[in-house]
Structures are given as C-alpha cells and as structure tokens.
Amino acid sequence: MEDLERLCQEILRYLKGEQVNFLWCQVNLSDFSDFERDVLEHTRKIPYGHTVTYGELAVQIGRKGASRAVGSALSKNPYPIIIPCHRVVSSKGMGGFCGSKDTQSLSLKRKLLELEGVNI
DNA sequence: ATATTAACAATCG
DNA sequence: CGATTGTTAATAT
Image (cartoon, rainbow, N blue to C red; front, top):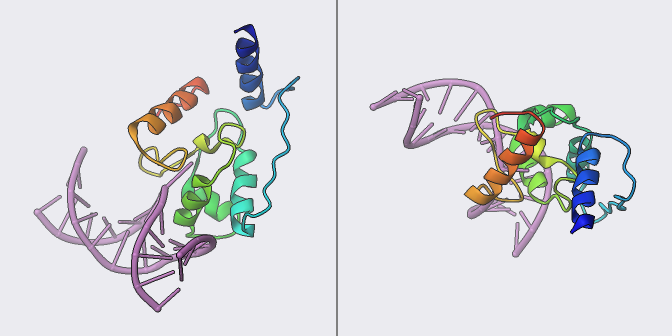
C-alpha cells in the first residue's frame, strides 16, 4: 500500500517532467508506422499542464490536415500517462482517451487534466 | 447553441 | 478499393 503511494508520487513527478527514481520503461515503438511513431513521440514531449489539439499536432509533425489520423494513432498509444495522450484534446471539447470516448475514459482524462491544472 | 455534413489523412482488410 | 477512425470547419436549423 505504501508502495502504491510512492508509485503514484513517482508517476506525478514523471508527468511534471521532473527527475524520477524508480519509474523506468523501455518504450518499444517498433511495429508502428512512421506516422504513428511521430505522433506518439511528439505527444511524449507535450509539457505538464499544456494541451494541444489534434489538428495542431498534425501540423507540428508536418502533416497538416491529418487531425483525424492523429486521433487514430493516439488510440493505439501503448503507454497512456507515460505517453501523455490525455494532453491532446479536440478543438471543440475533449476528444477521446484510451481508444474510446465513453464516459469512463473521458472522466479519467478530465481528472488527469485537472491534476495538471487544466480545465475543459 | 446545437445538429448535420462534407473534406481530410492514414491504416486495415 | 472501400470502410473506419480519440477531427474539423462550414453550414443550417
């Protein structure tokens, strides 16, 4: 139980981009397309408390107009939170999370963003 | 303010 | 090729 507490602290530190002690993982993105790797890699660099739009992310990786494809790529994110896809939102509302836009996923996404001081 | 629709770019069968 | 997708911008109600 105390381990869980510490793990949560570490994850929070990781999300903030601070030094982490025992959270490490080798992110293996082979068997993803170039496009999908670009999307995930750029998503990984979005700073704490910052959010980007699907369309904006598309522009950033030089594929203007590929907002929809960006969404598809993110839906395959193998490491949510570690690769903070919750920081990618729709130009209108929330978009989705973990490959779906059901209430569960969306409320979790909202909570993560609240944690970072972002309100949608 | 909300609902519908047509383009959109990439992936999959 | 056609269908599908964590979209978007334009248009209509």
